[in-house]
Image 1 (cartoon, helix red, strand yellow):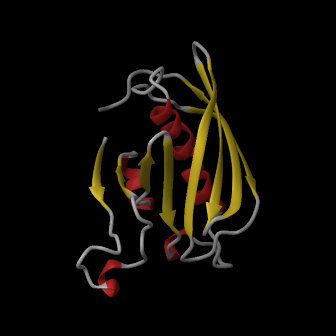
Image 2 (image 1 turned 45 degrees about the vertical axis):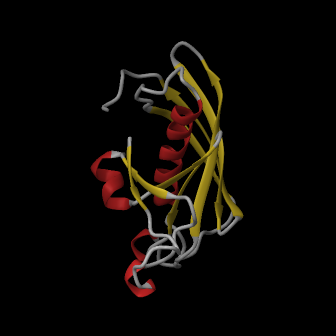
Length: 158
């Protein structure tokens, strides 16, 4: 997995050209295929055993009420869980984890411009399945709770 640097407060790019600030330590996640590339970028921050993923809610992500579209939240959660499992365990770190089941409780809206961030944990890994759960916040306030079951698939693309 390769990462491109994200904009931070310390770079020399003028603020108007940078767009919305990305929190310190986050870098662009350079994976996920064309769908995520068109709907991202997603960002990742690793600090010891803590792995966080996030993105800034843009106009193209919102519904008619100016809130993050549920489909974009589902997409984010569907990336958050398996990528967190990859980062936190060596058992399935190189395996493709297709989604079998994804449950999302939408707790509060994430509005245009908010920073959406999530953390997740593997709960159990069997011979063929991974169970995981996570919490997503918008500007620090809980906005979604997610759990999922994933099939342990073949070794994924490098």
